[in-house]
Length: 89
Image 1 (cartoon, helix red, strand yellow):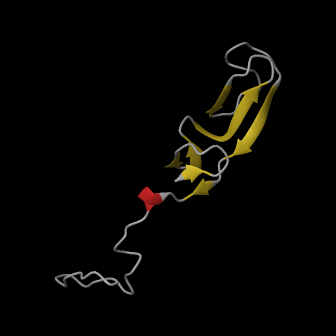
Image 2 (cartoon, one colour; image 1 turned 30 degrees about the vertical axis):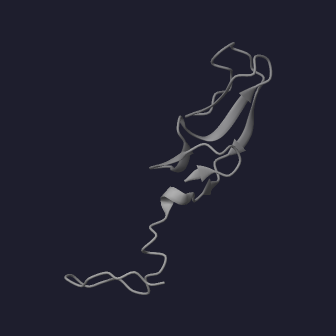
């Protein structure tokens, strides 16, 4: 899955879909320009210490091509053990 807003890869955690750094929210510092998505979300910039940190967006998962199994797209039912899978066109 990728994030709809920033295009970065998302990972599944016990808290749901999160950015790779572990946070739901991508944040930015107005003073130095630092961006990141740590968990928990910082109230001060970890780079310069400024309190001028705000949320850019929350992770919004969107499937990408690697999330699909091309065989499952055409399957109408699950195969029982021992059955052969044939490609449907």
